[in-house]
Each structure stands twice: as C-alpha cells, then as structure tokens.
Amino acid sequence: MVTANHDQAEYDPTEFPPFAVTVDMVVFTIDDDRLRVVVIEPGDGPAANRWALPGGFVRADEDIEPAAWRVLRTKTGVTGTDHLAQLGTYGAPDRDPRMRVVTVAWWAIIPDLPEPVPGRRVEEARLVDVDDVVDASFELAFDHRTIVADALDAARSEIELTAVAASFLDEQFRISDLRQVYETIWGLELEPGNFQRKVRGLKGFIEPTGHRSSESPSGRPAELFTCSDVTAKLAVPFRHPDSRSDA
Amino acid sequence: MVTANHDQAEYDPTEFPPFAVTVDMVVFTIDDDRLRVVVIEPGDGPAANRWALPGGFVRADEDIEPAAWRVLRTKTGVTGTDHLAQLGTYGAPDRDPRMRVVTVAWWAIIPDLPEPVPGRRVEEARLVDVDDVVDASFELAFDHRTIVADALDAARSEIELTAVAASFLDEQFRISDLRQVYETIWGLELEPGNFQRKVRGLKGFIEPTGHRSSESPSGRPAELFTCSDVTAKLAVPFRHPDSRSDA
DNA sequence: ACAATAGTGTCTATCAGACACTATAAC
DNA sequence: GTTATAGTGTCTGATAGACACTATTGT
Image 1 (tube, rainbow over the protein chains, first blue to last red):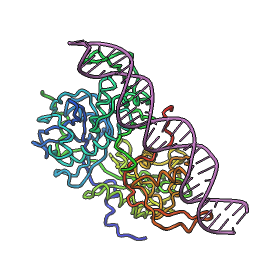
Image 2 (image 1 turned 90 degrees about the vertical axis):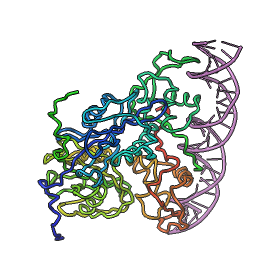
Image 3 (image 1 turned 60 degrees about the vertical axis):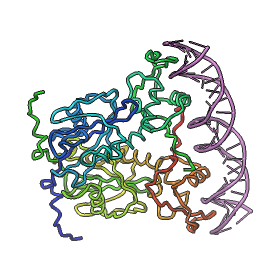
Image 4 (image 1 turned 120 degrees about the vertical axis):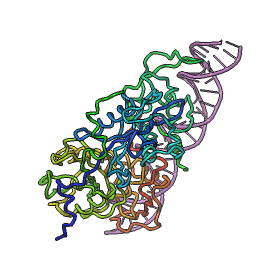
C-alpha cells in the first residue's frame, strides 16, 4: 500500500506538535451541610478577573500527580488531602485562547477547609456551592463548569464503591456525621437507623475507636469511629437509593 | 509575601514546557470465548521490534477523541466501534526515552474483530489474550501493561453499570451470547436461568426483535435481542457476584 | 419530667442464587 | 425417542426500607 506521506511529519519525533500540559483541581469540601468547591481568581492569564479552578502548568521534569499537588498548594495554600483521583483529560483545540493546552483534571476532598488563601499570582480564592457551578448560576472560565459537573458525577459514584466519604470528616467521626456526607452529596435524606446498621455491617469501612463524642449538643453521646483507608473498596457497594427496577 | 521568582518562567505562556501528547488505544474483543486486546509492532520509534498498544501523536488542531479514532484506524484498519471511553492519562517523565510525552489512554470494544491489519508504519498487528498481558507473560513496551490492566478494571466495572457488554456482540444476539460476555470478562460462570430472568427485567438494556436465532446448533432456538444504546446506564447495576458481606 | 440524639428489633417486600421443571428445536 | 439449549416456577436466604422501640445524655 503506497500512501502519500504529506502528513508524516507528525510522526517524526523531532517535529511533534508541542502542547502545554496543565492540571486543574476540583477540590470538594463540605461546609455548613453544603458541598462546595474551591475556585480562584487568577492574577493573570486569560481567566484574570474571572473565576476558575486552581490550575497550572506541569513542569518539564515532573510527573502529573505531583504537579497537581504542587498547584493546589501554591494556588490555594491547601496542603493535605486524603483523596486525589484523576478525573479525565480535556483538550479541545480552542479551550485556551493562548495556545494548545490539554489539562488533566483531578478531584480531591479536603475536610474542614474554612476559606482557602490566595497563593502566588492569585487575586482571590473562595469556596462556592457546587450546585451553583453546575447550573451555571456561578460562571467559571474555560470548560471548568463541565469539569466540575464531571467531578460531581465521579464523587457521587465513588462514595458508593469506596470509603472515600469518610475523607470529608475528621480523623474521628460519628456515624451521623458520615450519614450527613452521603445526604449532602446525594441530595437526599437517609433513615438514620438503617444507615447505622448498614454502615456498621460493611467490612473495611469504619472501625470503632472506643471513645464517645463529647460535643453532642444534647442526646445520647455517639460512638466515634475512624476510617483507616478511605480508598478501600467496599465489599458491598453502599447504594444510592434511587435505583428501582420499575424506573 | 515576597518570593524568589526562579520558577516563574513556567507561568509565562510563551515559555511553557513543551510536551508531546499521544493517544494509546486498548481495543478489546472477544474471540473464541477469550478476552483479547489489539497490539501492534511499530515500524519505528522506541517500541520498534517490540509489541505495544496502537498509539500516535495528537495533531496540533485536533481534539483528543478524534485523534484516538484516527490513530486506531490508521494503525490497525479498525474503523467502527460502539464504545470509546477515556481511561486515564499517563505522563511519568521517563515513560518515553525520546521526549516528554503524556499519553491519553482510551479503551474500546469491537465485535467480530478477527485479525487487525498493520497500518502505516506498522510491522504487525495481532490480538493477544488480555490475561497474558496483565500477568506479563506477553510483554508490552512503555507502561502499556499497566494501561491494559487499568482498562481491564474499567471494563469489569463498566459492564456492571451500563449496557456496554452488548457492544461485544452483533446487532442481534441471544441472551446466552450476552451471558458469555459477562462470563468471559469476569472469568466466572453464571447460572443461565437466573441470568435470563435478570437481564430481561432490567429496563433500558435489551429489547426483543421478534426474531429467533436460526444458527443454534441444536436445541430450542433462542429469541434475538438488540441493545439500542450500549452506553445507557442501567437503572440497577448488574452486579458481579463476588461481593459478599462476609468477605 | 422532657427533648434530643444514638442505636436496636422487627416486619415486609424485593431480589439473588439454587435447582427442578417445561418448551422447542435437531437428530 | 435422545440430546441440547431456551426459558419458567419456585423455594430459600439475604437485604433494604419503614418504623416502632429502647438507651443515654442535657436541661
């Protein structure tokens, strides 16, 4: 088979088309029983004076996941998280007006994140309700609304299959705290008694600490639990209760 | 906060580190009740004379998913597939000796793929058992063994949640054909009667065609079904039977 | 005492799996 | 008839959800 080689240049390693590779971070936290996401107002670039996800270029000698951690830290001051997962890669040719960029999007969960602090070359950093982003009442630059929507889908699925919901909470937590995480992310109410029994019965999810909560405003103090591995896959999924066979 | 700007260069759009962006394809098919994957022997590059996934550079003005389709077609002659999903992006700094490359990996399912044909700049193309790749008895270049293993995990999960198993089959298929797909991918046997009842009861999975199979070697001819949307999310997951609460 | 939250008992409907059974074809 | 596969009936054990109930704290 003889073919004209008018497009062979792109197969030549010395003439590959150069791309910029960035990372963008979708950082979730729960604040006041609302699912929120960290956004920044960049100090420069095409998203200056607009809100956007924290993001930045991957360095020439840096793997992608470390770049995600570094960008998160330098842009928002956020340092630790139990959970960082790759969401997907977005690379429409026109997604950034400056140049050809593909961005690797990640999503993470940070407990107790009151207000992020603006980092280098960042004007402002704040938390915004995920719902407002997804329904576009709070606008984000680039394709970041889509990325947040995809991250929300990923989070909703992930808490069914793994113990990651616990990473929204402190080291020790009550079962009712964990239930609130599910209720917030799924946007529904769960029956406290059944939740209790179900989650206690799941292997590899939570372990009792032997301590009891002292902060309860009233009522019987709750037993405190920990989750040793938030990435652990649950033996049985904790299923979102919307699925009915008569759907 | 005053900081040395020794690393500010990377924030300058005109001086971002240039990356090559490639796509790599994990193409599954079922052949003789074995799950197989398409591999090629590139005619040049660092994987010449080794087996590797079909892959290639994304063009300067091309979105990533079209690039995946193009690469698949030009390298292996494979043109159509019902299912193409992004798997993840791999970008360790040393994963390609030539240059800094990040690759966006995709997985796809092609029914009835007897033998792929080597495309441009490809010496050979063939199918290989997925198991042999994952257990490294069949070696692949770069990090392609990891990518195939991740794709297998993705496929095993995806057939629980969507109708994608049907994309291994022809337009019309018997329920026992569909059962064989699950058995092959999960590596176990399912009880035919229960499978039949379960899959017939799931909304949005299969629809009867009104025809019956004429190719049955013996026995009662089976009703033929179609799947109108292989990407449809099942209302109720078709669960892999390994998960027991006493696990 | 009451209010509030934690946690358990129990009933019921549903569903997965085991397996016997019937149905319909080729031979 | 036998054999093979398609498809159904039916039982059982597990589980999710509803909801009543007990348990343990503060006020």
